Length: 154
Image (tube, rainbow, N blue to C red; front, side, top):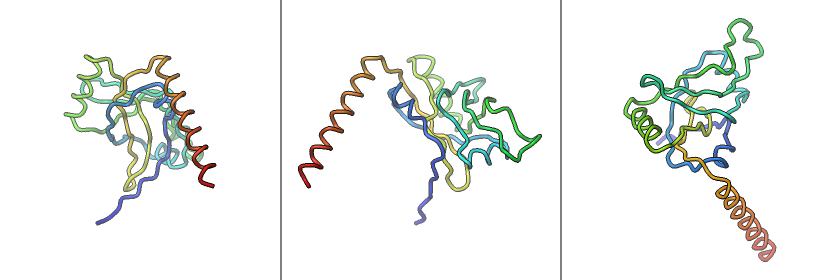
């Protein structure tokens, strides 16, 4: 039994702050050679990116991949919409949920597995301001509990 190694390149921490992540899906990224080289160097930003579905195909918008240093004329537009590779059934399911129930499809992280660039996308519902405050309060309470437990155990 072989263990597949996953190399995480970029994460969208803001997504977990702004949205409730209901489900996650893995999608392949359709990239050009110089874009793959930039992603391997970690020159990618997922902060304000989102996904949309057009004519049965899913695209990620707002994902910034910096131009490759040695790419010269082969570099592409850093903010161009990138096509995602998913099964048609998954795309149609996501399309139905986003249209009917007000969900959004948000990229969560980019990673390499078996040499292929993959994107973890989440089916997300937006948080209200009071939800964000509640999460921050829980986080600080848990941090305080951990701190007191570690002091007690010493």
